[in-house]
Length: 592
Image (cartoon, rainbow, N blue to C red; front, side, top):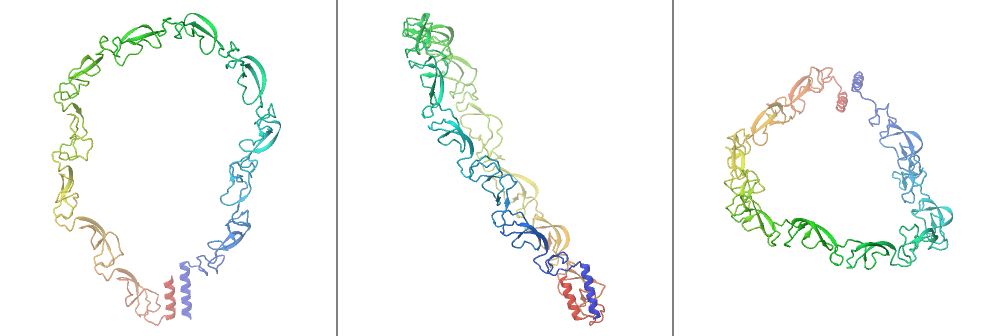
């Protein structure tokens, strides 16, 4: 009994040292802080509201309830449900700036709403409106309107208030000025200031008032006539015009001016304008100033100024504008153009030498060219100086720098505008690409030694490599240096720290590794790899006594004569501890 009490005291002390507290229901909350220490489903107290409709919003006064991860059904942590019996509504719009638009016409009412809604209120706007009837989407604004008995859009009488849409309904109007309430064709009073008795569109002064529709009759005007009709008894005349005798009928007169009442033009035998330079010739009436002359009629002109009598235009051969070109000889129609040309001895269309001036016809004189840039005057196959972007002498598509301008004809063969790349040898089409390579003596794909530059067809030459890092140039099985940080010499899967490099194939070979795997206490013996802390157990009862020892072993059973426990009160007597106590102690230590 004394030994049992001793073990209980030991266990109590160890529990106190480990910081263990009482948690009867195993919910992870100490009994002192758990509001339901005997129930693992509840442990914290929160103020809760009754949620009768299950919409996650409660109502009424809150009550302190002991809960777990989630509130129990019928309760919520949020209050304020404005419709406790309706799960689709819980939020009041009061004070939130919503205005009702029940008929969906985009026009809200002027009074803010305090309705109870759900998450996404529809039928409400955030802008105050003036909808006078929120049950009808066709009307929304209040207007004072007058009755329009004859339906002409103009009413009379006293106004009354109506709720309307974009325009007044039939029978109502916003104005009340109908001068003929029983006649839908007349409703406006107009004062006129002129009349047109002969119907020619020109008015004489007259005044009065008419009740009409939208406009005055065509024979009345509401303003004073600006140009009164000079004869309102004849529709063919209405305005005084200054006119001149025109005996040849070319509509340009001469002689003294006369003022006559006329229509759109002059009276017969008269003209509105004067200055006829040939009063008896109907084909000529106007002086024309000219600055250019074409005496030979070839269309080319020379500079000459003067005046000539003609019709609407000056007679042929006279002009105020120059012809298409200046006539170099106005006495011969077959020549007119001054040609600035260059001798073209090889007839390739491009001349050379000094420029010459020749008077000829509309085609360039034979043996001459417009340009004088022929870079090969005696070779008809070459005439232009070309500055190429590239040169490709061997035609393989790879180019070199052109080396300056060249003299060519129509073809630019050998001088392309695009390039596949820089040619390392433009004299041979079979090679074109420079490669920097290394000698690969062992044929493992990695070379060594100094870098070499070879002109190739784009393929790597045999016995060479693009890489020059072979760490074993004469061994085809090794070519790459690998860094390692750990070694497993005995192959037991447990490593010891060791840094360095090793020449191998594509991957790091065993026993080297870049990452640690355990901490081998003896890398020469695969049967030992783990440091273990043990106590000598001389009486073989499974519990030893200090001092403890650290041995290099494996992770198998504890070797004879040692124990992982070190609290045997008498290590010379195997019966010094009760097997029942040992079982309880083993179970306790195993669960810690």
